[in-house]
Structure formats: C-alpha cells, structure tokens
Image (cartoon, rainbow, N blue to C red; front, side, top):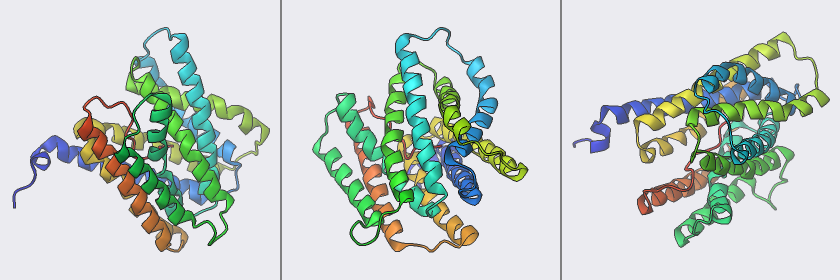
Length: 304
C-alpha cells in the first residue's frame, strides 16, 4: 500500500521526526521539575528556569530585534509576560504535587480556552463544530478530575487555572505575529516572564542548593532545545501532520511517571486525556479545513 503523498515528502518526514523529538524533550523537562518536587517555591524555581533561558535566547532576540516598539506592541508583550508568568507558577506548583501524566492531560485543555477566547476577544464566530469540540474538551477534564467522586486537590486546581492563562498568552502571541518576528516573540516571552517572576521570587527566595541549580540549568537547556525542535517541526511539515504528534507527550509522560517516579497509571487520566486530545485535534482540523486564513493559534499545548 503506497504511503500518502504527505509522507512521501522528505520535509514532512523531517517535521515528524522534529515533532517526536520535541515531545520527548518537553516531557524530559517536566520530569526534571517533578524530580525537584516542592523543595523550592514554585515562583523561585520558575524564575531561575526562565532567567537561565533568557541568557540563552538573548542573542537571538538582539539579532532579530525590529527596532522601536509601538505602545500597542509594548503593552501586548508586557501583558503576555505577566499572564504567562502566572500560568507558569501554577504549572510549577502542579508539577510538584500531581502525577506527570495528569498535569499533561489537564494541560491539553488550553487550546479549548483559546477557542473560547478567540470568540470573545478576536471576534471569531463560535460555530457549532467549535462548540461541540469545547464541550467534549471539558467533558474530558471532568473525567480526569471526577468532581463529586474524589476531592479535587490544589495541584489539579492549579493546572486547571493555568490553562486559561496560557490561552490568553497564545491569543496575545497571535496578535503580535501581525507585526513581529516569531523568534522575537518567543525571546520576549522568556525575558518578560523572567522580569514578571522576579518580585515573587525575591519575596519567597530560598538559596537553592548546587544540585537544584544544576537541575534547573538542565531544564532550561532542554526547554530551549524543545522550543527549537518545535519550531523546526512547524517549518518542515503542515500543522495537520505535526499537531497530533504533539499529543505523544501524554504517552511519554505516563511512561516517565511509572518508570521514574512510581506513579500509578490512572485509567481516568488516560481516558479523559484521550477525549481532550480528540476535541483539540478536531477543532484544529476543522479550522484548517474551513479557512486558510487561520485566526486562532492551533497550539497543541502551552509550553513552559
């Protein structure tokens, strides 16, 4: 049986390889944060990770700097840094308290919030197919959280609250792409998050051990590499090919949780995650079919 035309294209195959590698790297980074646990305050750990990332990405920002920013662009960058920093703090808090697979599965709710935000703030029509995808996504979240059948803990609530913050970050990024280079947008997010996280880090500062600094440095290196491979994947292959592969993170996260941390494989998390993945994939696929002028970011999940 002949391969589909898309798979016969070497660039598409490269994109698939880049996306698989990206998903592994992102899960590796989350594993490091899980390993560190709750020893460091979440805001301090997030600040150190983003500060180190800023040092790595600053040369790229300088190289592609567009010159003077307008008030609108400055406002978007500032607001995005504050909002994304809030989501990152909640993500770090959740990662130290609930299984990796559960954090990953709940995180897939973010694209659902992007769809809602696009209708509220970008004036996009919330068509029936979108509404159906949103409803299915929240059903998946309910399967994972099981309210009424188990107590919803703070880690779950933190990750669930992080999702709409990351969605707002994506929507602001979409507005910035109208005038800004993508490399500058990524770099400015890292720098803005570092600045936004600084006051909280100072307030809750605890001198990290050498081991903690080494682990956070490794996390920053892996995260930077993961963002690079993600960009290469999007450049090499259509998003209809790369996006579903991003959901491999749930599989890698489940495997890592079981093997490295002895976390039980919760069937509700896997079932709920599958429902959310299906909803997010359906929304993205339909949007790409309906309109070639994509107004809404189709991010598979927010990356930290």
